[in-house]
Image (cartoon, rainbow, N blue to C red; front, side, top):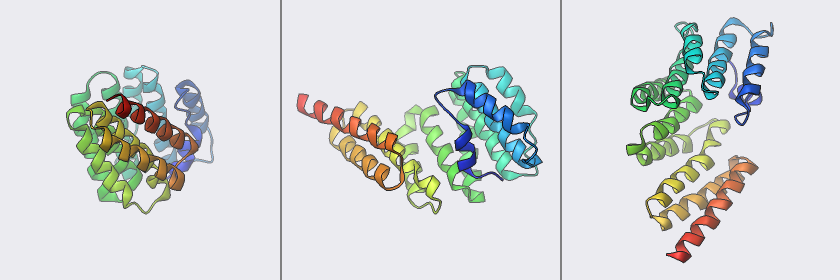
Length: 208
């Protein structure tokens, strides 16, 4: 199957239309085998869904056979959940994300397990803190460096949740951890977001 880094190079989340074209081009590339093309198709479905074309995305996901390749099957579940969540059906998406997290853990696919837990926090807002902490716990023990990159974003997300409920001291700790993880295993953009969050939290604490 494909390395996550390969998929990341094709993605531009700020421009899902560009991402769609990149995945269509990749699907036409004969160097990818059948299973790899099925995995690429799941990401094409995600790119289409991000543009609000939910029925088209769902129809594409219907055509992908993930029975013989577990990673493809997990990605189909995950992307179906994302389409449901984005189209306003969060409650229907939650069980798909839960199943994705369980299957990812069972198969040892650390990245997809953390991705599912992270997405659960967005879909199940009543338990967002719990899901984010579960994702952090999982990512912190991951052997895959690419999965550990989640740590900066997850700490930042948890900090935002805590900040939003007035738990500023706890939030500051999370933002500082986000900055540390960004330096250790993340990206410059993650570090910048963490520093901006720290500044905003400091201002809130001063105002309080």
